[in-house]
Length: 218
Image 1 (cartoon, rainbow, N blue to C red):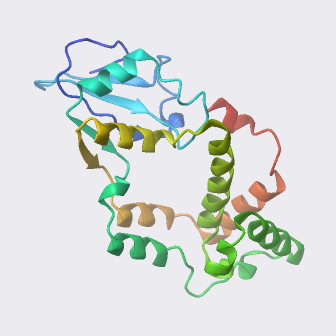
Image 2 (image 1 turned 60 degrees about the vertical axis):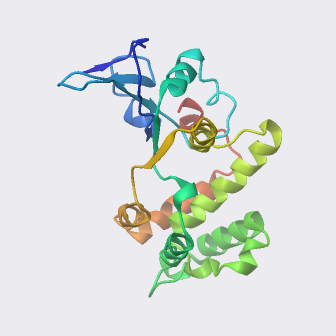
């Protein structure tokens, strides 16, 4: 069963990272859920997180921290501390398009120039380290997001929330568990056609600096 109430009888819990929109359909206004029943000897706990440094996201409340303290394991989307050089190189290699360039994905030359110019301006020196023309649009979008997150971090000094759970779990001696592998994440991203990715990237560039209603709501 899934119960939004927070029970005090936990000896072990599971803090798994899910995007908040997966929880919006639930009938209860809660991001912290208890998982028990069906013969489970101990409950686990599921917390819906955002990849964000926003101060509001870090307003966890005492109940979340009490359950985290009671955990003997913390499960995350990916445990970055467990990523070796091979994993990093594999992730970087899958960032790139094989037989396509960024220019190929835009029928309007102005759209292509606008996107490339904005990306190079935002990522700065990394533009010289990476071949922007060959990077998949979703990864360029992620780079832009990261630049914005870095700007937020200078104001708040917060970690991304999932990284906060990872660091806190490590400091408290919890076992860290990765739910997904790099291969699984890359395969999921590749399900989205490159032209759709390019449209999303263009929309992100066109709406840069505007009030993001969806993001604020999440």
